[in-house]
Length: 241
Image (cartoon, rainbow, N blue to C red; front, top):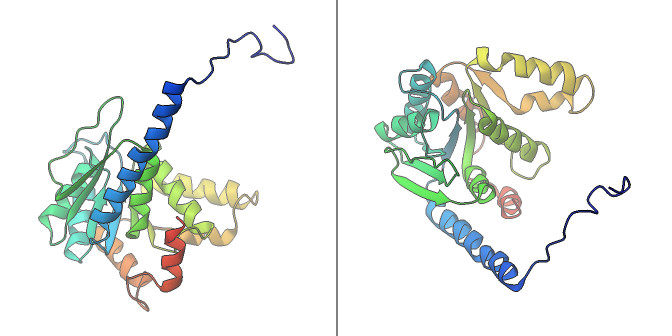
């Protein structure tokens, strides 16, 4: 093995015409996901995207908390958007459907197939995480994040980054159930802020609450002096999302 090039011994497999053709045709599949998402979700505003673990059973306190949060949000006039699967996603759709506003699921096809829950008034299906992520953000008036794993943390980091960098308008980012989040928030402060990986002001990009009522209050407080519809400048930002 060449120590300067450890990959020198590996056979290089050139892309053939069939592979290139498949790659090119994927563009149309991706376009179709965006077009369907834009067409079906543009009419549901204002909406709130809710995230949390897919592994939570229906008898778990987090499930009941998510269901109550979604019901409160739905009755307040917001469509509820979840990932369409089980656990907290199911609880969110269930609570929303029991309320006054539409329940929306953005389902994803996975190697270990995610089963769509039964509480979706509008159900979209995606192959690609990136197009699904755009739909979570593009029409959201708020992000509500309940306890979850890597996928939940991924969505939280995504929206924090987009707002921090100005790639999406400032919206409420609400973490629910402070005992779950407190150590992460401490780490943000003691490591990220202290080592200047983020600014101290970035800690104000999100809010930690414990009750469904606090979730709705935090959303309305954010929009107290303005409407829920994005301004002309914000619409331009969202076009480049």
